[in-house]
Image 1 (cartoon, rainbow, N blue to C red):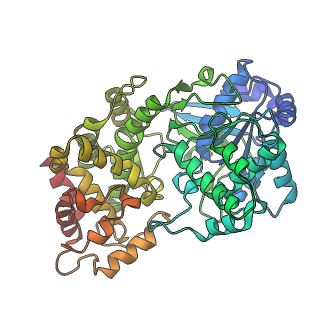
Image 2: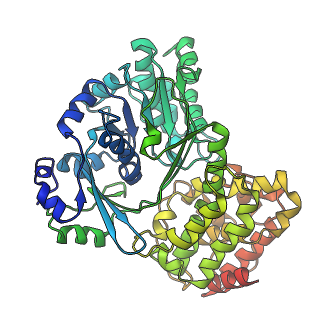
Length: 540
């Protein structure tokens, strides 16, 4: 039985393999969405399908909504052509439970999947039509931290950003330029209100989105492509809102094991693909069960009953505390730590790392002793309970096929949030305790060691994709820093560690540099040094 909309009518087959079907007429939802779109999502990756689209489906299943979600993308157009359209935009969600059981649900509410490709006029015309519709309430985003960036680590504008600023809204190439162009269409159509909701793991993600969009718009105004009224429209939160959010759900790349399991159930046409840009995708998503989405309740054109779909709606201050709890303390920095040392030590599953005494102790001590002390309790979620769930249930889940190599992707974009916020918190709130931090400096040194692309056995390995990796590799090389180098790194890291864009703080001002140097010297010394340094640091 192929995965297709036509085959969903064979309810007995899907029931026999315990797959939950959409509880609505897909064609009817599609027609209503086309006529009066309410929700557009940018970024069609795993977390969108496993969580965000599912929120909307829950509302439709309950009769609380009658329209679905339109997804568009500014990158990886192959994703839509190879894993959306051949399967009628359907997705099988595979809930991987710690007890080994798997739940299955088909997501059927993605009504259109449109590549924001300016070489395809009909696509852009349709997206502009949607953006101009008064019914549109939400544009949400999961485009990763780098999707919002207009500048490199030195603060220089990317060439793509310069292009968008100099050529105006007719043919942008960045995601932020694309969004600015959609807002321009909406402004011209009637200046209708709208909420733009970033759902990425970025601190104050709404502000990051707003800042990048407005920087492009300011350039357009300066060059005469738009006027001050358009700038005022986007800058007015009563008309265009950029609420903050915190999202949490681990959605690894598609697993061959899960693919084989689905095939053995009798679903014949499934396949995994790797796009030319290195993205892994499939018409199914394997994900953990725990999920959290906290959003600032700021929707000037109204919103669905998101709270009925599992979303926590609250004020900005509470979102900030929840995001800080998760992204800067109780999950993401621990994930990044496992990723860095997991790659160096040859691990290929996060759950296997949690069986390793040294690695488990690393993230446990870091979480409880270095991160948790500067976390504000958001009240809506208990930090201690959240951290306990992460360490005892989520990371160790043996059925979640997550890898340190995936988590290590774009580490340079993650460090300022996952560690810089905590370091800054100590500097401003508890400066006397900065000298007590031992494991965060270890991870920073570990990342520099990781960038040399030599594992703990002295073998070369391929580091994960990262836009700043080459820059820092060149910086290390320029300082003569290499594996099993002669001499010490002392005094050679100040330029690297002063980069506030990547580390979130000038580490030279923290007093941590001597310890980072000491760790890196030891990590570079010999084969097996990573294990020795790690064991010593966590048992000290």
